[in-house]
Image (cartoon, rainbow, N blue to C red; front, side):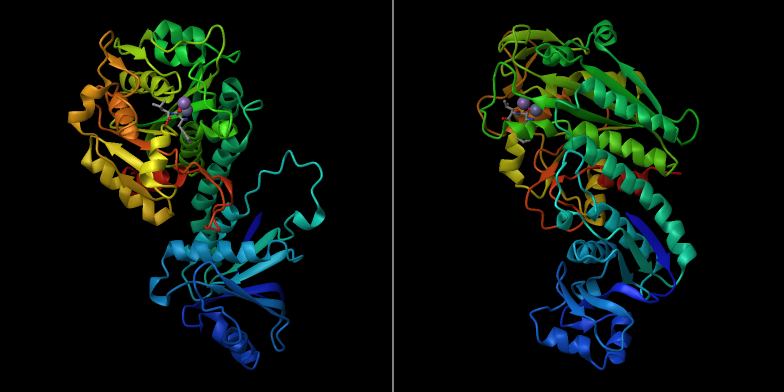
Length: 491
Ligand code: BES
Ligand code: MN
Ligand code: ZN
């Protein structure tokens, strides 16, 4: 997708303008309507289009306007046109026209700020994401025709400048989505690690630890998860040092279960294919590091990815096994399907032990119970730090990645005590399954300020209602944490 910023629309194929609720044309729309002798207002009046967000009305070849078509794009209430509403409108304009046959879509935002024009271009890049590499017989009419989006803005230079870092974030979200979309026969731990190595081209430092190195570190809980797999487990360590030399980094840790069969505690066959995206946490952290490096963020950050495949096999770990984590704590593995926390236990411990970070945030498609408790729109945030939890919560509404804070009550901690080891990897029964998982992770944070984001509900979307996020891999977490860092931890 090519994004261009221009000072005037010129002769356009499709010219999109905003309309607000109450059928109120905004910006360039009123002048166009006059030029077309009221044809736009008339078209609205004779339709159900009201200007509501994420809706549009196509007006073909209105006389007096230099365009093949004018697209009226709903932008919601006029007094609520924030940056996110501009993104939604631009993405909706793209979705409404992508299969039209036109190659260029021009969106007139000349009445808005150049920063908002940049947000529009950014949103179109996210909206145009497709994972089509394995489609060998695509019908021509299913392939988007729109390949260039021009955004009309009063200050082209300023819009381009604002678009630079946003485009780097878009690259990162798309990188993350590609990782999540790949099937597990293609994206296994070593292949994931190989793709992360590409971040070196952006100036990040990437180290890959194999099973031998992790064994030497005593990372038995992570390694136990991968024991049933033919694929070697990996730990990817990404460093971006854009901040002050010697300043402690902020750290991000991702669950990268490239496929989760459940192991010997095998999952039911129905829907198991979804577990190819059980590496969504690691993909978010990889994407975040891509964003920070790509936009040269003024911060020291590390990303640690625990990459494994959870398979049933003669060599796989068994329910009831006891393994020793890098922290020294022993873990009774009651259910081999509660594997993400075993991976994160060692990855979190390693991260705080090696980097002494200011804080750690882990992202993980950790529990099905998360979907039960918050539904599909919100990720759960568990934290021992009010400051960190507040900063994460504040970023959500700015980027359209919603979060909700969950408790980690000390009273529940005894539910993960084991009679034969220091801790067990699940609670008693299903009660509070996401909370007992967070309590488990907390035991491996060594008191470091920490937040755990359970993205089981948000990493993948079916039947998306958000034009900026097509069905499939969301890349959830990249924008959220990039924004949190930009707002609170840079410079
Ligand atoms: N990867 C799953 C959680 C999951 C489920 C993510 C559905 C996305 C969609 C995780 O490894 C898992 O299997 N968790 C178990 C934990 C239980 C055995 C304590 C679960 O949620 O059932
Ligand atoms: Mn599992
Ligand atoms: Zn899992």
